[in-house]
Length: 601
Ligand code: ADP
Ligand code: ZN
Image 1 (cartoon, rainbow, N blue to C red):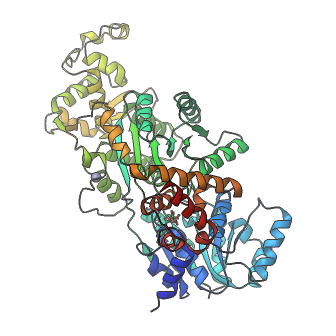
Image 2 (cartoon, rainbow, N blue to C red):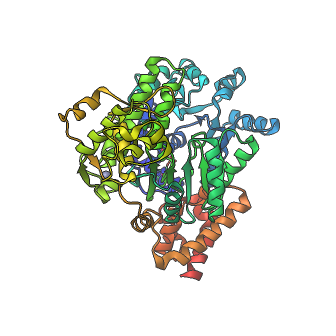
Image 3 (cartoon, rainbow, N blue to C red):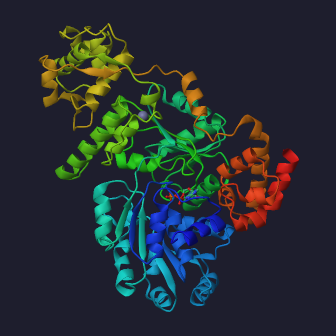
């Protein structure tokens, strides 16, 4: 049977029982010498798709990756499996680079990671023509696309591989979900004839939650308390907010670090390193942080501001739960975010065409935030995928939101905007509706308006919710002068004239109890009776990681340790059957693991 060698290798080297999803088809296709374009979500298991065929075929697998900072960890993870892997990039000293090149020529490598700019040098291409290459893997293939934010010009030149070595299979991989980028990859990398393997982009282990901003810091700390001593990312919009949030969280007893493009490179590198290597760090970051963070045990991704688009949001949240264990994507947003982002678009220097694109991206995202439907269904629909049933693992499925008839409040809000001249911001509009007697109201003579004090029946929080939903649904627009004033739109007319009914989402009260309980269920599920052993195993792993100066997860994943703690293998034979333990790890670490199980068990 054709699949035997691949399957044997998977068990022997990687210690996994079975391929996941489409992995087996991809591996066999590439191992047989064909080209492939693989679209799979983060955490789907792309690496195996080129690692297994590279090991099955004669020669060295060349992996092109833009993520220099991560090559070392990837190579280290392979070495832990007994694979002869190396990398070549600008961080190596001349001597080491020369050794790697010698090993390449001597056929002593199974796998070589290389940065695109290095690959494209005449020197390296000539080295390659004197080596025996098993395959070319082009990782993060969306870097070839000008539309994505990770555009790398060198990627455009990778067609040289096909031109010079037409018989060597190429496999390009990306986790980018949107169809235009996918088409561009196939075209630019000359992979139109390659077989395309498109997986579902669903990440079933991630729980999506959106909360309305009320008391942002308290909401964030409540959320984080449900994730004590777990690693996660807190995204903030600005550099300043990153630093303030990190400082605030440290003050609250969390192990938080800042990351943004304005920090000195060595601070950035060091913080990233700590995030990868230490347990339980909360990284407060702008979106400069993330591409290629392949730490498998990120348990949550929190957004404290509105992201700019669905694709961005999906990519950022995709960094949670790559190990397939329960993880949480939490987004906290409010009216202020909507107004700010809309203002930024209107005030930018971009062409009208570009602005239109940005507007529709934002509207799409707002639709997601305000939706009362299953979040997963909305999310995947955005990527052209149909998710048949409500998922049962998002906030809207778990606690279905209540709707209320907001037609009359919407009419009051819109007429208040109109009567006051379509130039005031939400705070003032609510003051008018609620009949406030402050200075500005008197100065402007707004206590004489027919809409003055007609909204005393609702509290300010509810009014904010009404305005937010009106803006999100484009029944109000934000002025382009940048004062945050609101104006009517074409869509408002039907509401004002009573031709259109408005149903709104009732914002949940900001309680914490329920949230904390639900957060607990999204952590790594270690049974209470296994906890002592699990922690002892973690202790051993930390020791091994320190000795070898590598991140703990390249030695064992949390899930592997949890499985050991659960199954309590009494011998090496039994240990070999635990998922995640291949031959090399078994002989290297097996005896010590079994010893710990014996002592603790
Ligand atoms: P991606 O690059 O697609 O984000 P990775 O290749 O890093 O994903 O794989 C994600 C995680 O899933 C890794 O921890 C990997 O070890 C694990 N994994 C991949 N394939 C399998 C499999 N067949 N069985 C068990 N675990 C797997
Ligand atoms: Zn759902």
